[in-house]
Image 1 (tube, rainbow, N blue to C red):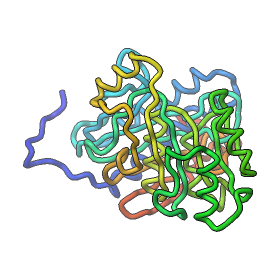
Image 2: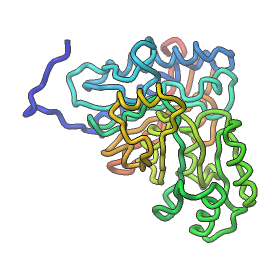
Image 3: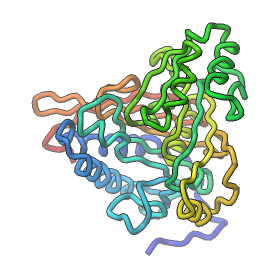
Length: 330
């Protein structure tokens, strides 16, 4: 049973002290999935990452609650929404995670699979239900409020080009390749803008906007998972940039799920700071090669990972390389 601390003994969220531990959580989840890269088994790859991430989280001196996870309590052994993690001896924190963002990408050895986790003080991360979210995101170089959901996709591209002082043909938009986005894609292409279609991994897709010089992506748009939207907002809280999110419900069961998590305004548009209301730490480790991070590198007897570790309080961004003996890897 976890110890109960009186309010006077409330422990402070010390992001600097916790950040290296969070990086290790992401690293170990990536290393655990390494043997499943290109093996065609999405479920096994995801489960390996889940097991390693849970094990490492439970070593941290935190009183953690998973607010963005892989499903509900009855879907264990996934890291489910509401699961308690950590030793219980540290600060009360919210945790948003995706142990393997891109299970299909991993199984097929395709680009941009990541392990992703964010941590903030208790009550700071939006408890988004596992439903769809319509997302719009741009990097830090654009003016506040430059895009909105009241604009058509083509108008969003035009607004971005005007703000940047360039032609619409100079803009590149990242969109998840799904049939539901056919009209959106056509509208964007009618402006002359380029589109980078991705098959999976929209957390990485949003993060691309914050590093446009490296990735070549100016804007992300489209409908994907709401949990991934919150994780992307955590990344942009550290990297800079704007994201708007609006929940998309397909049926009454999904609305009921939202109400259960305290969401009653089904039309609300969430900003980055609505989704991440306080300081946050964010860590992501590359599993397969991508635009943001290299994938796991194999050498005889060794595995090497690279992790992106960021803190919103200071704006610090670290790239950490970790070399591990295969015999000692999860």
